[in-house]
Image 1 (cartoon, rainbow, N blue to C red):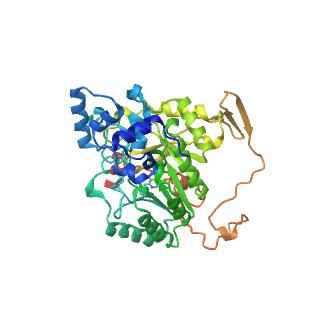
Image 2 (image 1 turned 45 degrees about the vertical axis):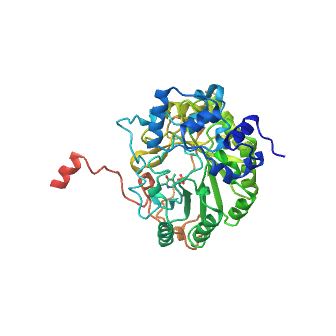
Image 3 (image 1 turned 135 degrees about the vertical axis):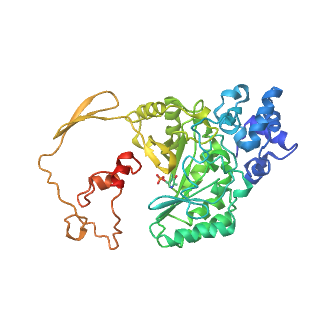
Length: 437
Ligand SMILES: *Cc1c(COP(=O)(O)O)cnc(C)c1O
């Protein structure tokens, strides 16, 4: 038997007088009743903003739309709403209209790296495929604020087909990441169709879905949806929990249903000032995730998208959090802390330093407790010259179609077979002088 909190019963009653509380578990009911204006939030939470503040909030909502599911709203503790982590993620702040000089509309250059409709192709072997631009709830910290809710960017059939054709035309793409918007906002049959099309492409080895449905609309994870998803293995899902409070009986059920369908689950957290910028909160979140079979994947530094300045922390806060996790808790409860670097540089991992010093045959390391230790390196290791001629090598790679691609970046500098010794920025005076000669 489902158990509803008193808050949930009150909210359901205020939304639809006399409505059966049994609707609460119907995800379409939540979609029909998503809250999209300030006044309704005031009414449902029993709070009231001063006139001036309400005006500012309404202006904010004109720029960046408001949308909250009744379920997610019900997690807010109204008596201290201003500090409430759910409220802060879902409810606008007039600070969103402040644009810092270093903010960017598209900091990750996703539009620049878009060779086809709905596709961002940044890495050699995987693409981001934006299949939807709507979400059940619009996160105030969204990196794609420029796009969500914009009726002009709803991908139509032609665009979806164009994106699938692009993937089919590029044999190096082995991993397709469905994102948006929220892919799980698509109707079951459309999602099934997209997954079927992708799965039919021989070089697509895995498909991933990035979704916040388990957090903001757990009832979307129906038995039918789980059964559809289970037909498209290997399928991975990454979700987006940011605070332990979001892990509820309902979200646990949604996660269990996905895990029981054999879907490996990951979580991407965004480090947010005033929401989760605390080692104890993060540790509690990571522990709750692994208890529910979700592997923490990434912890993101907040992007430089416009209107997010009030959510950003210094990078040091993230390092402090990672320092408080590594060694202190299970290795699989520690996410990789990344900065998705501006200009399309991609995700760059950031770690505290554990390697303190080294000589020709020893490295000096420190652990999480402050113990300093040494690791003695082998005297007998014979470096083997690698010319990437795997046929002649004693190591047994033995892949029939060992798809050989040349080394890139730092990997290239480290390799034996490539003679490159420097990577040189091309836009310096020194290089210009060389080119002039
Ligand atoms: C994050 C991202 C991916 C996936 O990166 P992983 O590190 O493999 O999770 C792929 N493409 C784009 C454009 C991305 O932003």
